[in-house]
Amino acid sequence: MCRVDPVRELISSELLAEGPQSLSFSHDLNREAVRASLPSSAVQALDRQVASALLEAGALPVEVATQLAASAVPGDQVAITTLMKASDSLAGTDPGQAADLAHRALDLTPAHHPLRGPLVARIAILPCTRQGRSRRPGPPPTGRCARPCRPGRRPRSALPSPASSPSPRR
Image 1 (tube, rainbow, N blue to C red):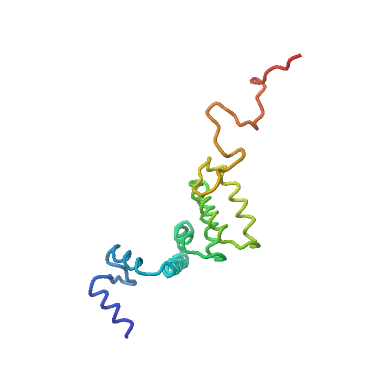
Image 2 (cartoon, rainbow, N blue to C red):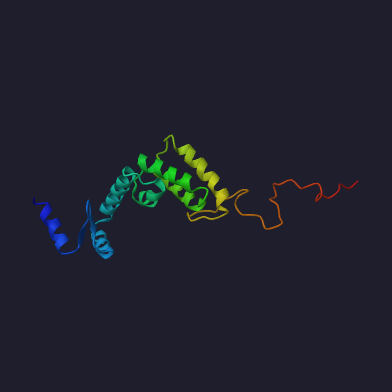
């Protein structure tokens, strides 16, 4: 009963609101004030637990990816696979975000982990769909996909068409 009394006090002072099966903060300012009063390591651990609870409740990987990316620690297998799945889901619609999630999954992956190779391959392919977008610090993508061609121009690697080829001189 001693654990319930402080909760009842928080409800009666309207800091918490009681729902049918859960408690919630009565206002976002209350939630932010509580978060701000906690050490960052505690906030990170709580965020990671929330992400796990959401996944167990059936949330899609893309729905928890941002929270998971921010709260996971290196070697977190669930975070690595979830971020990979979220990256796969976003690759067709938001390749930039997909690349960011794949990079974060790679950051969490130990050196000899079996998913490291597939992550590196995914990251190598995604810049081609990003058309030069890069939120990650470091050099921009290089190679054929580093920047789109101007309208009416072909990449240098493309073979000239017979109609546009100059005739050989004799």
